[in-house]
Length: 225
Image (tube, rainbow, N blue to C red; front, side, top):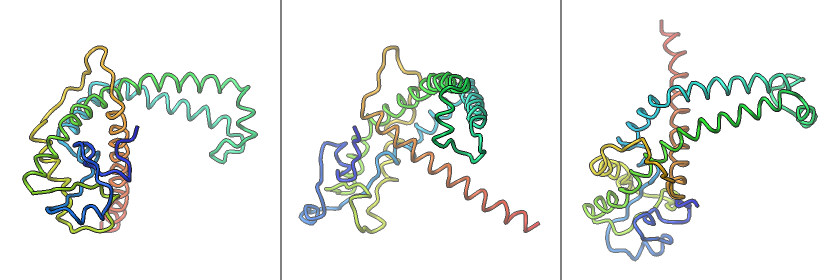
C-alpha cells in the first residue's frame, strides 16, 4: 500500500484528504506543501539511527558486499560475449551451469542478511512516522495552514509555501532519537514499509547527487594545481 499517492494530499497522514486546486481556492487560510518521506529522511533521529545501524550491522554489511562481488564474478563467467549483460542464449545456457546454483545461494544469503538491516531501519522509520501527524499539526496550527498538499499535487507555489523544513524541525523536537533494536515479535505495518521504501529512494538519489558533485569538483581541483 502506497500512502503517498501522487493524487492524494499529504494531509492524509493527519486524517484529511484534499482533492485538488478548485477545493483549495475555497479555503480561507494558508496552503502548505510538504513531502512526508523527505521530512522523515531529513530528521535528526533517522540519520542518527542509520549511523547506529551501520555500526551495529557492520559485519553483515561487509558480508553483503563480499557476496555481491562473488555473485557478480559468477555472472561475468556466464557472460560469454563479454558485453556486460546476459542475453537470452546466455541465460538459457546458465540454467544448467554450476554457477547458477551458486548465484541463487548467494542471493538467498544476501537477502537474509539484508532483512536484518532493513527491519532495524523500518523500525526506526516507524517510530518517527508515529510522530509525523503531531509534528504536522504543530506546524499547521502555528502558521494558520488550512490545507496541506504534496509537491506533486501543485503546479506552482511561492517558496514560502513549502513547510517541509518546519516539519523536520517539529519532528526533531518531538522525537530527537529512536530505538534501533525492534522488540521480539515486532512486525512492521504496511504504512511503515511503504514510507521506508520511499525514504530509501530519497537517500539513494541524494547519495548519487553527492557522488556526482564530488566527481565534478575533483577534475576542477586537479586542473587548479
